[in-house]
Length: 475
Image (cartoon, rainbow, N blue to C red; front, side):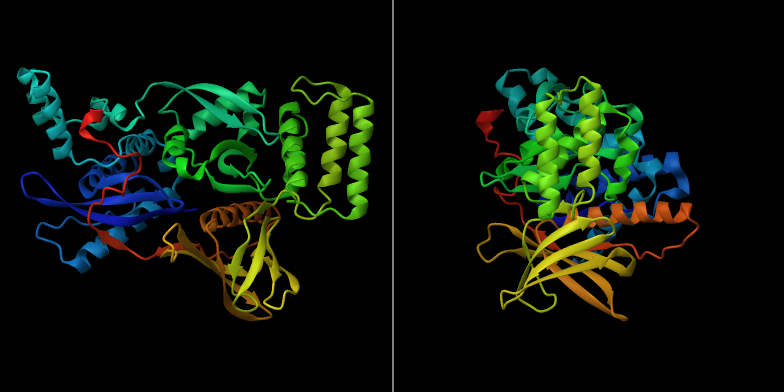
């Protein structure tokens, strides 16, 4: 299924020689990856087309005359659709050409080539190295990797240390390269924990916020080609951490991980976290049984370290078997949000998993209503960017889905900053459901979700930076 690519802004910039060009802000799940010109995207498309031919979707045509505003808007929309459609083929997204492009895009934030040329010239003149000024002329014919300008933005490609957090609050410190992808970092981390390689696909990296009041907020799943070190720098204002969580929405899939001690430990730590953070809703009897099981485990001095022993393995299996019976186990819980169901002005606690979106809705009358929206009655959905709030502090996202309620299709809206995460969870649930249905010889009709948002053509702003501001003194 499509990745959540969007182009949120198109900045009209002027080159030193007077020409104009447009720089597009490429976002994934609402977070800025980097900025690219049409010509850069076009060259990338040509590379993909050499490898994959007709499997690559049509690329927006090149205009040889000045574009009108409507033409510019159309191109932005077409480029966004292209980025979404090109991710439909896993052979493309797993290719070196695809990954290399986004690695470069993330490491080298927006700077026009002419601006880079100017700065190179400035540096060389300052060093009295005028004999090498040809470098600035040759830059336009070179690839991004030919020069190492990353240090200008405090993200030089070099050795670094990265903390990957587990659900129990502990962390694994990795010695990495800042250009390492999420896929590479996940594999190294799980290998250090002793996880079987074939089980890696059941886990993923996530950015999350661990608030002082004990609330856990999952911000987004990290795409395999993202550079976690770079993303963390650009998300500093959110105070995010990088962590490992299981990545499947069907709790019964736990049974596939029971023969590996490392995966048992990961499942147990996340289950404990879900209990402590009130993500699961056990009955009073279930909670008593859970506490009794833990108490007995401590009596026999069960070790939950990564070294296996028979007693602790039995305890883990019993614990996970018990917790799988609890409501919302294995779900992703979203932060409280506003919704328009069953009427405007409602708030909701949203839990996503096990083929449903479950909403504990607080009505304007302060009554609580629990509603389960099953994915087999959901036809389509969309994420819409509504712009900044009145205070201008954060962007507003709208998640709406078309649902068959008692034979009538209707749109239901959730106003949540985690709209892209919710969409990713829906896609995962549908994928798992379709795989299971295929094994059982059933069919499921799914209308793919799509992204819509307001578009902006803006002038360059000093505040519109992926990373911190750079001054001449930083060169």
